Length: 188
Image 1: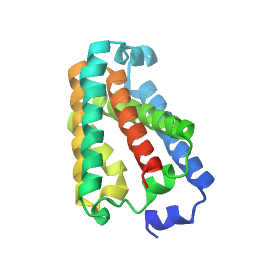
Image 2: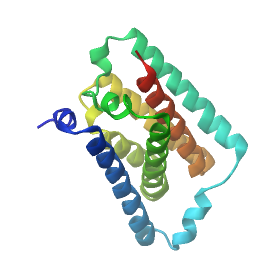
Image 3: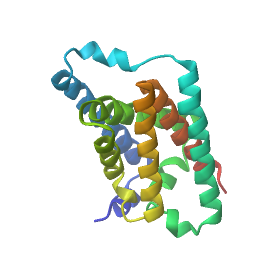
Image 4: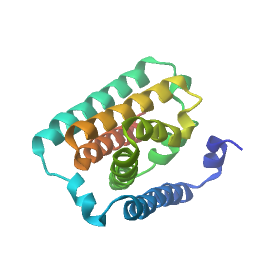
């Protein structure tokens, strides 16, 4: 059974539970991996810095550009080219703004801790970007979505390489997920 077919059978509550569960799995893997791969668990703290300029230049501004491009694509391209099987629409269409903020925050933190904080730090930029793309399995049969998530993944990896700051990538990821979730929620 396809992922989109499974999602269609889930209630909104069940889908939310699945999303949160998957992100808790990512956080758990991140924590366990950090114990195994880092000399000290507190090495995590070295990857967080409240550097306003880096967060704005490498996080906020690029995220706004990505969201703008995604919205333009959704307005000019045929819907079937960007259809992820209805998963994002089902996830965001009926959520409150508070729920969308929560989802965006949990996903951004969990995925960036794992993909940038553990995988990229340990195995490198390319491996982390490719694994990030593969985890977004529902995009693999949609060339435009696949290219979009691959470019985004490489950008997030690049931003982390340049800044060494997980707050930059978490901020970018959060803004993208939040604004696109709100766009889906309020789109007519």
